[in-house]
Length: 120
Image (cartoon, rainbow, N blue to C red; front, side, top):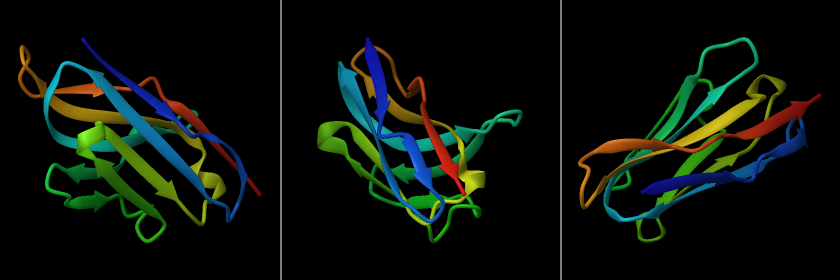
């Protein structure tokens, strides 16, 4: 059984920063990739950023140069440093960890989400 838990959301003024964390626990054999999605009210969930097992990163155009994803495979943890936040970044942020357990190969596990609210 794998559990994924996010933390670090909150309320911040435009231009400010927040750091999200996400940790997976359980019988994890290896991690393939980790990343973040977000869903704003009334909108579909959108991809934000991904980090591969070797550290390669990719970002949505809307967050490039402002957000930084990083990971610690030894701790089964992924972070999202968000700077220069804008009101349009307001959303519930969901992390995922694509991993392999001893029993189940290559599956994405999702957290329940953490709210980020940016006010102007």
